[in-house]
Length: 510
Image (tube, rainbow, N blue to C red; front, side, top):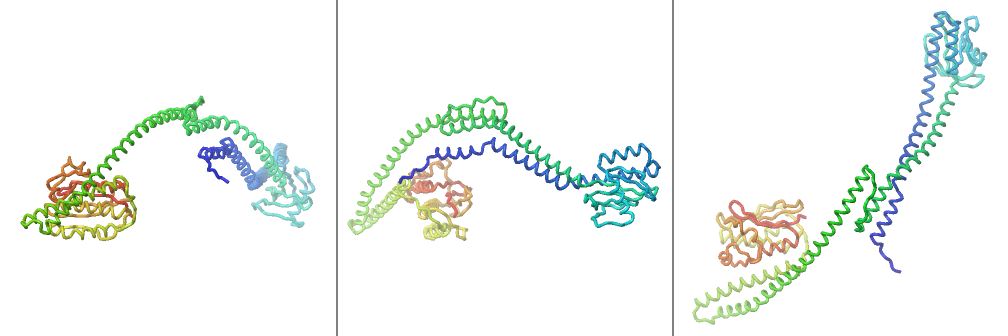
């Protein structure tokens, strides 16, 4: 059974369908419906928790205010006055309150309510403390009254009551049924629930209609962007909105035109680039062949020269002085040319990728110390002072053999050009990139002319040809440095200092 991998377009289409399930219309509807449901539930909870307490507190204030009016009428002697009676009756009717006022002889001066017998018994029960078993809770104690919550023995109804003595020694009792308060709270909650559900339904319908008008141009823009992703730039946004969506559509149209133009230019540039690449490849082949041919042609005469030199050294010529002189010259030339061949071969391998670069972790401080120790005989014979202040190990990532070759070329170059104070200082500093370190090799001596700086790392380039030939230089060492550093994509260079020249290269710190 064969398994086929899904194409990018198929995967993108499936992801688009999944995203389409969460449309803006649905999200808006769910968010607003959720907010409204949460608000209504919150209000119902607030009602259930606090409305009854608030309502009862208001009724307590109503009872106390009614007592104050009755007390003032008692002091003024207007309890039987028609205006007072009318006012207090209105208060009782509005608040569903019962009221009774009696004198010490049990004569009723004023009664307002529906259960005269019950409220009278309740009053005498409180006065003479002949109470039947019932629950009472004292809420407030005044000089002339008590405000409390109690349950009627006969009916089992819960009341808020205030009773006591008036200024004229009359007894009074006023009460409001608490059950009506609870019933009002319940009715309010049910009403809010019904209205809330109706409001949610209407709101969702309105939100769906509004968001569809908003989402339609957005979906059109999404379709245009999808076509642009497939490099179809004929799609244009045609909406007439003057809001942010209209601005976005206009910008997408401009982006489409810009992308089409850019891609056209890139394709043209790609054609030219391809031609340049082919031309460069041809040139590289020619260069490679040149170096290979030069190396091949030099090997044979070098072998012959070396053979004659050895023959002369064994006594072919009778004139010992001449024989030694020619032998010395031939050997020197052989060594120089042999070195050049090796360098050309190394450079050829580096530049044309015949050898794969293997990255490894090693201590560059140890490597530098080893190379300085190897060059100690040469530097001491030339009176050169070597300075390397770094002691602690520093580990790096690179090819150790190639890195050693870079450092050796720099060190040899410094030894051959060291003059003046005859000092060579090797140091390790932070590199251009935070992950790199920079190895520097400084030698005192003549500065490099500015016009030669840009050519230093070119093959066969020599600043001072006479001096280079004197110490056997071929002009290839620094081009090998360039090739090695390019192969690991790290910078390198040379800088004139106040009393000498500093060569440097960067390497990645481990």
